Length: 131
Ligand code: HEC
Image 1 (tube, rainbow, N blue to C red):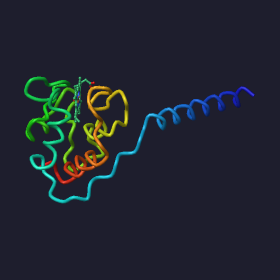
Image 2: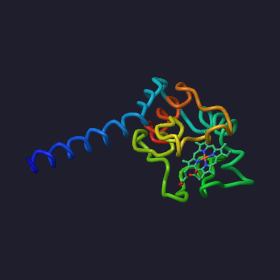
Image 3: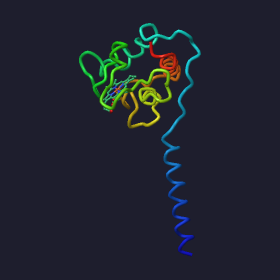
């Protein structure tokens, strides 16, 4: 009987843990199909509109600057947020896709969330090597 109770409570705990992660998570939008995506042409306008007020010349929240390609690729407070070639592993992508509300960028209520198309373009840029 005791063994059954332990097994049951383990099972409930696991089920709870699984539901909690599932609830806070969305899927990443797919990478855009566009070829030849570059920072200057495609990404800089997005960052200038939605990010640079907090991650630019004047302020560097989280020690991150997104105003130039070189700055965007540098390590910030928690390490590199862009892993060239691997958009799904890049914390910046998870942040703009708002997978975890606490880490969502731009922060809740501060500025409009990026659209799935914008997130897809950022993914394509990173997957193509973040040039
Ligand atoms: C209103 C201010 C604000 C705006 C706008 C904003 N951020 Fe942030 N960002 C922050 C703050 C504050 C932090 C650090 C604290 C935290 O993690 O919440 C941060 C941290 C980050 C980090 C984690 C850096 C690290 O190493 O910890 C990333 C990545 C990021 N922002 C990306 C973006 C992107 C991309 C945009 C635009 C789409 C953006 N942010 C827009 C305020 C902002």
